[in-house]
Image (cartoon, rainbow, N blue to C red):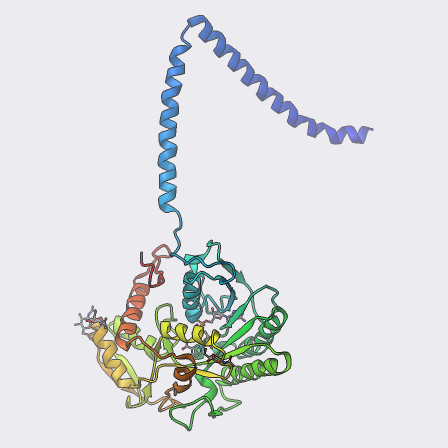
Amino acid sequence: MVRILRIELPRRLIPRKLKMVVCCLAIVFSLTVVYYSITGTAAVPHKRSNDDLEAAIRIIDHRILHLEQGKKTYPEVKFLMYKDRKRILITGGAGFVGSHLVDRLMMQGHEVAVVDNFFTGRKRNIEHWIGHENFELLHHDIVNPLYIEVDQIYHLASPASPPNYMYNPIKTLKTNTLGTINMLGLAKRVRARLLLASTSEVYGDPELHPQNEDYWGHVNPIGPRACYDEGKRVAETMCYAYEKQEKVEVRVARIFNTFGPRMHMNDGRVVSNFILQALQNESITVYGDGDQTRSFQYVSDLVDGLMALMNSNYSQPVNIGNPEEHTIMEFAKIINTLVGGQGQIVKKMAMEDDPQRRKPDISRAMKYLNWQPKIPLMVGLNKTIEYFRNELRRSQHSERNFHMPEKFQV
Ligand SMILES: NC(=O)c1ccc[n+]([C@@H]2O[C@H](COP(=O)([O-])OP(=O)(O)OC[C@H]3O[C@@H](n4cnc5c(N)ncnc54)[C@H](O)[C@@H]3O)[C@@H](O)[C@H]2O)c1
Ligand SMILES: *[C@@H]1O[C@H](CO)[C@@H](O)[C@H](O)[C@H]1NC(C)=O
Ligand SMILES: *[C@@H]1O[C@H](CO)[C@@H](O)[C@H](O)[C@H]1NC(C)=O
Ligand SMILES: *[C@@H]1O[C@H](CO)[C@@H](O)[C@H](O)[C@H]1NC(C)=O
């Protein structure tokens, strides 16, 4: 009994306090009533409180207006009827290519789920969709299984540039093998179609120019790039094993070099290097004599190609790239001119294993997907330069540099 009393004692303190507060309020109220009934001035404070009320409403109105102005607005999305609206999963959707694909599919009116572990992806690439009812962002590593209901899977998750995929080769391998198995397992369970973002690196250091899809490639299985090249090659193998054995619908895109806004500034690739050097008024470094050629596609062309492939009935690998070739020296000059850079172009020792040519044969994409790149190099470069210029201007987190979808410029 004693024990119970001891426990109950502190609990009863709270109602006591409450009672005291209520009592005080009651006293104040009755005193006020008595005061006004004696002085007979009840009408005046009544009027005054009306004024107060109006003032308060004005303040609230102002606040609401303020809130509405600061309210998040989303790019306009098309309305799709239930039967046309697909649930689409994009792995690696917070990355460079993935975020542009998210933009396009969202604006078409689909429901988009992004899965990303933010290894190289960034939340701000897709920040303009967070909160939209058609959009979902899942922080998840695809090396672990995922259970979710979807109709289509764009499987893009994988580090993509040499410094990123060489940073942790084992993780790169796991992402491309275990991760791809997990996504194919998911596709099998929910009967979704899966598109694999493969790469021109499956051709390795090619002996055939330009490369077509029937070429088996020339890859060093134990070289520094093998974790990526062989990872993607086995990912392709897995796709066709699941197609054959489990009847999973697969699409394989062999993506060639791509550039555009939201690409990584410090990935050490030709376009980003040259733009950064030119913007910072540094001399542009060309390795070797600059005669080696490259071809680059603008990211919106790639997104068109990926979507065309996903929605086609063609299930063999398809090259997606821009066959327009330029020498490295030409690129350096073009970029320097567009930026208005003052720097020189300097030549340095040639890099080891630097391929002399890489160029896609896109006749398959033209034939089966009716696809070919549309964006001229200069237009794409200008957009990328603008994005990089804004990135370099940032000195504080609050100075945001969003690259909004084309039809939603703020
Ligand atoms: N950009 C190109 O030029 C190019 C060329 C050929 C192929 N590709 C392929 O296209 C895809 C996208 O490339 P990108 O340029 O947008 O690269 P990116 O690095 O910007 O995007 C890759 C995304 O995958 C995410 N990711 C990596 N590992 C993951 C994991 N284990 N779980 C979940 N998410 C993970 C990263 O955080 C990032 O958001 C990649 O598969 C890449 O191999 C790109
Ligand atoms: C594939 O699509 C094309 C055009 O869309 C069509 O002509 C062809 O019959 C289709 N093939 C199959 C096997 O469905
Ligand atoms: C760029 O460099 C040139 C020559 O080195 C110099 O004259 C010029 O003022 C620099 N411009 C800027 C913007 O720093
Ligand atoms: C690209 O930008 C440069 C410099 O701002 C401009 O002179 C040029 O006309 C632009 N080109 C295209 C194709 O937009």
